Length: 339
Image 1: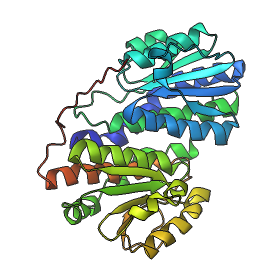
Image 2 (image 1 turned 135 degrees about the vertical axis):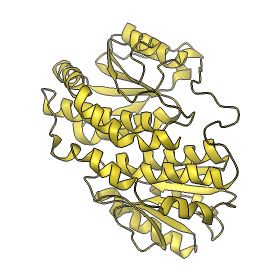
Image 3 (image 1 turned 30 degrees about the vertical axis):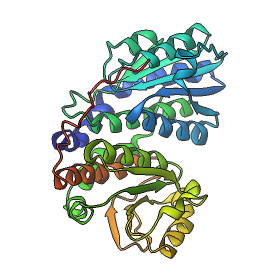
């Protein structure tokens, strides 16, 4: 897992170099076909990448976006009318039968279908009309790290390419991501925090907007590697009841960056302070918390590719501090085939 995490700057560079052309071609085709809405289908870690894609689609393209319920198709036999839709399957392995079936049915119903995967010869890629290889390379650990962030970058480039109309992407900001990722992975702050939370009984993660997928992915990594119950909430949802869980014994990981979503987290942090919660902020702006995992100050769209990095390291270090093996989580396999 440590090696996979450390490779991410290199993966970002490879995606920007080798995948830019294929992504631009797909983006240009999508722009020509003008879908009226976008539906994502994914599971696990890739579901969080898909959620990020949904935020991008609605904010940057102005298109309604949703996450499909694969069980509606595979368990209940539903055949939703997906004409004029873009249906995107996001999967590291491309091997889950339910995702393949959703894409197959969507294509049958007249949707434009796309697979985003680390396995270009997978069943998912074969079922879709078009596919994008995220080029993350072999991932050693069961818990996904570099494939997740490669999916994020591919989705970012895809949506920006659709927005431009001809597939081109302004790389003035995105091009700095490999260097910024390397900078973010330096330092010992995640390892220091792992010692502090070694005996935590549960944790809360939270964020809003583009940061919400990061909060959800961080919670999953903690559960996968440390078997630590971790509940993820949007900052808004946290205030609607789950805030009652927060107290000095329940650490809260709050993803707080710049932009509108970061500003909207001010009230959340204030309410957590009222509860005397043990808060760690993650992002470019500490917002007054006692503990902070710093990441570069970038455009809010790019922040998820950096904010998750110290959280991956925290999950790894916390698992080791608790005497667990993060490379071989109990009961898990690299490819989970759901139907």
